[in-house]
Image (tube, rainbow, N blue to C red; front, side):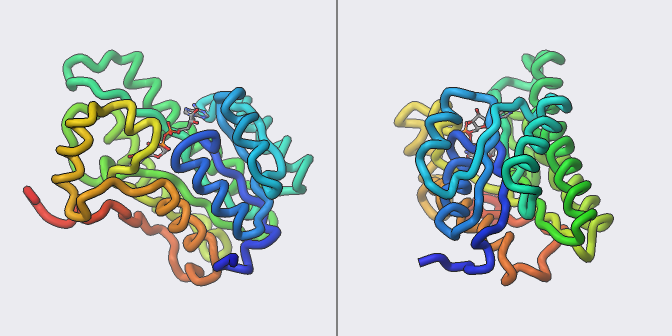
Length: 251
Ligand SMILES: NC(=O)c1ccc[n+]([C@@H]2O[C@H](COP(=O)([O-])OP(=O)(O)OC[C@H]3O[C@@H](n4cnc5c(N)ncnc54)[C@H](O)[C@@H]3O)[C@@H](O)[C@H]2O)c1
């Protein structure tokens, strides 16, 4: 049974929707009865994902780092659903590198997708939501945006930027449009799994207070709550969902 009946019929865009957290979030909103519009740059995986649920109401293959493609994806959603009520801006990439080995090209690519993509998509959503007088914008930041983590200087910086983008937008768009971001810790998605050997996965689990990675569905559940009326007083927040990973120093 749906937990948030007010989400039924809401027009929801999820970016990075073909895999991992994005797919699980799209599925959760579909389960709640929302009309979900999926965006991803991987057209093949997107087509496969879009066919999986009857409440997936459209999809568009776009690179969130391209202003032109982002604008086109919103126009496509306008055409098929008549607008947007909830944005989950989630597409992102990470590349494990020693700081001194990060090329400027890689730095710019990570920034363009992880921070630029959030800017471009949330701007298109904000234009529409301020015009209609309501809406919810949600973004996927990371616990890597709240503390230093080795080997991800570009990624961490981009996610810290997402948190401040969220807070600034929340100030400007209140009281009609709410803006929040979530900061997941370790989530077992294809992106994360690809970086591990079995031994690395077991070692990482041991260091997390909850002794496991999050399931992507647990992040989707937080997104559904944040879009719901129960979260109507929550804006400008960066909400950690990290199994206690960042609860203490040197834990
Ligand atoms: N997995 C984790 O542990 C974790 C933790 C914290 C935050 N995050 C964040 O969650 C988000 C989703 O990550 P995930 O783990 O589900 O990864 P994933 O690789 O499973 O899925 C990411 C999806 O985004 C798409 N994508 C990548 N670049 C894109 C672009 N430029 N334009 C459009 N689509 C693009 C990919 O094709 C893919 O379908 C990312 O922003 C990531 O930084 C992940």
